[in-house]
Structures are given as C-alpha cells and as structure tokens.
Image (cartoon, rainbow, N blue to C red; front, side, top):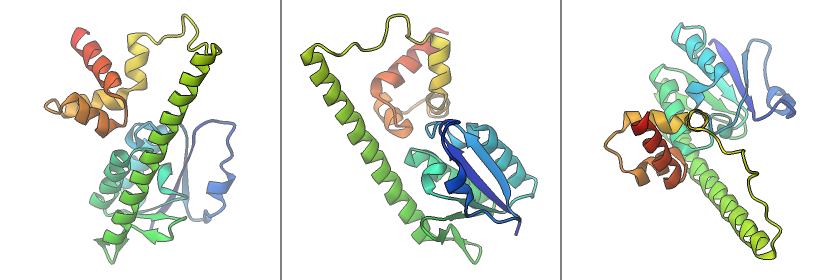
Length: 201
C-alpha cells in the first residue's frame, strides 16, 4: 500500500502535533491550514493529495478524525465517494475503522460517518442559535455593536468566501434555494445573495 496522512487545522496558531502523533515513517504527509468550511477538493493540500491518488502514488489515506475532511456531511460523503471510486482506503483514527474491507465499501463505516456528520451539523446549528440568542440579549442591553461600518464584503469577496455555494448553484441549477442552502450548509439568505450576484455579473 502507498500510504498518506491528511491533516487540517483552521489557523496557523493551532497545533498539528495531535494529528501527526499517529503518523508512520512511510506515510506521505499533506497538511492544510484552512477552514473546514472549504470543500476538500478546493484546498491546496487536498488537491495535491487527489493528484497523488490519480497518478497512483497513494491508495491509503489516514485522518485523525472525519471532521478533518469537511464540516458538512455533503462534503465528507463526496470526498469519501471520491476515495472509494479511486479504490483508496480511508482510515479514521479516532473511529478505528476503514472505509473498505477486502476491496469493497464498508457499509458500517459509511453509516457511522453519516451519523457523525449529522450530529456535527446539529451541533453547529445549535451553536449558531446560541450565538443569535446572545446577540439578541446584548442588543436588548444596548451593548451589541455588531459589524463595524465599512467592513462589509464586496461582491467578489462574498463569492470567494462562498465559492462552494457558487459551485453547487452551477452544478444544480434546478434545485430550490432552500435545498441549495441545506446542501451547502449556509443560510437561505446567503444562497439568495450568491444567486443575485451571479445573475447580475
């Protein structure tokens, strides 16, 4: 087997040591410093790993946890499907399980990943709800300042931030705004603004 390890941290001040402690000397290392909201196939090292897979350099990938591959279930499952299609075994260390057994997809693995992905999405939704509640309380007390004037993103920056939404909007032109929002794990308002900018540009 030609092994690789994929790591991801969100910012340079975070420590990769926890993710790297399981690596073996024969593993190629791919480490991204990027938000988990960025799709795996749009990350610099993610793309390098995919190139290594496609040229036959890698056929076994390890990650510390499934959330290293993406924050939303759609992206995780899309990446998993990519690995399976290319006959690559994915091992998730904290689950102690591999995506393929004897060359066939491990259905238990896929089920576990789906459940974990749904739980993670629910946790993020709950966090966002608590944030909004905190903002509402702060506003009621008159201590919430909100975004400083002049910090709004322009249209180009907005599309860059939500390029995964742009991609799925192009790939699924018949999907409703609500379904696109669910697919990309953003608000309906974000999808509406993306579509508006795309139409006007």
